[in-house]
Every structure is written in structure tokens, then in C-alpha cells.
Image 1 (spheres, one colour):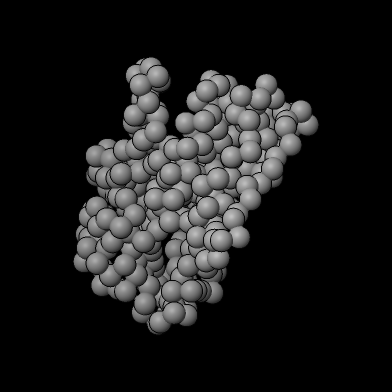
Image 2: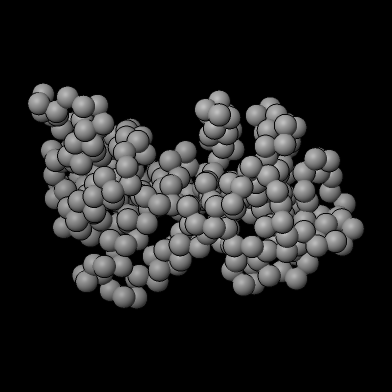
Amino acid sequence: MRKTIILLLLLASLSEASQSFVHPHIPDTIEDENERLEFFILHYWDNYDFEDPYIFIEGDIMLEYFAYLKDVPYPVSNESIFQTLNNASRNNQIFSLYIDTYRMYLMNPDSYYCDYERYLAVAEFVLANERIPESKKSVFLLEKEIISTNRIGDAATDFIVVDRNNNPVELYNIKADYVLLFFHNPNCSICVENKEKLSNSETINKMVDNGKLTVFSVCPYDEYELWSNTSYPQKWLNGFDRDGKINKEKLYYFLESSSLYLLDKDKRILKKDIRLELLEEYLFNLVKLK
């Protein structure tokens, strides 16, 4: 969080001196809306001078870029990210700023634009770049491991926890169209807040009531006494990782104490570290489509 604030302050301090930004012109011959969007994102930085001494652009231009980036297919966003970083690498300072900005927007669970799959292109660019010392690549190796562990589209790692009666509860024994994994620490204020929001979510409660969704609340932290004395909605499954295997064996990575995973009936991961409001929107549209 501290690094994010410092980066935002740095961007703000540079914005007054930054060069003016000119959007790319989309040829009139491209009529399909999807193709126009793809052209726009692939050529977004065409008119930007990456060697400009003022080194960066206004924050709202970056926000616009990430807003459009999330609406194109992954191969297109990957190409855009690779092109951008390749151009930014001409200047070490601007390259570092772009890397940090991609991390802040795409690898931060608190970000509206958080998307590990898109950030993977950033990590892979750095890891494949021979000009970057190996000593500086360790953080990107870890980030790639975090993204690759329980990756979206893959089958979630199975685990067994215990309920309040000390009975085993296994993830893969849960029968439901969708399973919402809510990893949390009952000693964490944000986790408590998210628990309340989840328990009061109209969309989630409707899906739980009609049997479409099972909320599986899991505490993977060493907080047994607090967990055992914490109240949870009656219709949720609730478990405690008594052996601490989830964290010890890195079955799941948690960038924050509170983490939401949405799984389908086959336990394949649909969403990972998703914000609650985006989860509600996704579930609402999912039910509406059916």
C-alpha cells in the first residue's frame, strides 16, 4: 500500500510537466467495433515519445488505457503490453515507472482493473529480457508462480479443513453449480468487513437460497480460538485449516488476508482474487444469462 501511494504521488508530481498526449487515429476502413478497439489499444502509445525528458503522462491517460485494455482478448492485451514495455525500456526510469504502474493496476487485488492473466505478460517480458540483471528478476519469478498457482481456467487445488465439530470438509466433495471460496483471517478488519458485505449481498444470498451457489468460508491462518468464536451465516460452509497446509505447502497464494475465488461445478477457477462488486456483477449476469 505504501509503495502504491508513493507511486501515485510521483505520477501526480510529474503530470504538470508531462508531454501532451495524442490518441491514435483509427482508419475509417476499419468498421468492426471489436477490430477498432483492438487497433486502438495496439496503437495507443504511437504518438507518445518514450524518450521525453519529462518521462510520464497524466494519470487519467493511464486509467483510460487500462479501461480499454480489459476489454480486448488476452493475446491483444499481451501484444500491447509487450510493445509498450519494449518502447519504455529505452529509458530505465520510465521503464521502472511503467512496470510499477502495470503492477499497481493489474496485480493489486484492490484495483478495479486487477487481472493476473494480463499482468503475466509483464512478468514474462521482464524474465525474457536479457538486458535486465538476473538479480532483479526474482520478484517477477514469484509473481509468475503466484499467477500460475490455481490459474483461472485450471482445476482448483483440493484441500481438507475441519468444521466447528472437528469433522473434515473437502473442497471437491461440495456439490453445487458454483462454489465461492472465501479465504480470510477473522483477526483482519478488512476480512470482517468483507464477510459482512458477502453475508448481505442480495445476489449471493439469492444464489445460495436456490442452491446454485455454496459459500465456503475458510480460515487458513493460525487463529483457531478467534475463528471458533466468530459467527458466520448459517447457510455457509465454514472450515479451519487445522494443519496449516494451505499456507505451508503454498496450495494457494494470498496477496491479501481476504481472498475470493469463484469455482464452477467441476471446481475450475472462473475468478481469482476478484473484488466483491465485480463478483456480484459477474454472478448477476451469469444467472441472468441462464
